[in-house]
Length: 272
Image (cartoon, rainbow, N blue to C red):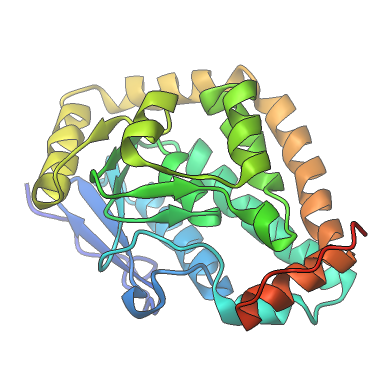
């Protein structure tokens, strides 16, 4: 079956990612390889737009999300971090809400979502990599939530990570900021399969083909049922996490952590 011609939404001029359709499968590629596919406000907006395009296209039944180059996503973009340091509390809250919207959208996307992790997935990039239905990763991939190392807080990802790997493992990862390899991420349940790099996208399409054999109505209703079990709690916790994500940016430790990160030096924490 040939792909349906792209709608105007699908044909949008993306700058931070690529959106392609091939019959019933859409592929979204984070496409800032020179920046290690770091998250910018533009990338967040475009990722939300691409997911909307995939959902609204009746031909598309499965989505594959991957990264260009050797890194999947290195976390927040340096320029974005510099901008955050100058924002008002209202701007920080609005920024936090948009980030929360992205993570929640990935977690709740109504069609099967496969992530093909081609390299490092750090901080927010780790959330993008692991909050899908199926996460495939190359053996060389690294995962970690490193926010506490720069005076930030892994607030938004904590809501979903606790449900994914359990309270104890989540505490260890989020409080230490440790970076783990693909084998450990698989053991914890963050990764579904480890796949050699040369077979990563091939395997993603093989998994997509399994979804295409199933009833789209059944898949949609099954995902909806799974999400409804804790829908209210997740919404409440994301709102609480959004407030914390914005509030940490007003602290001395956040400003020091950010400055030390940008200046490539060890931070001098004050505990405030």
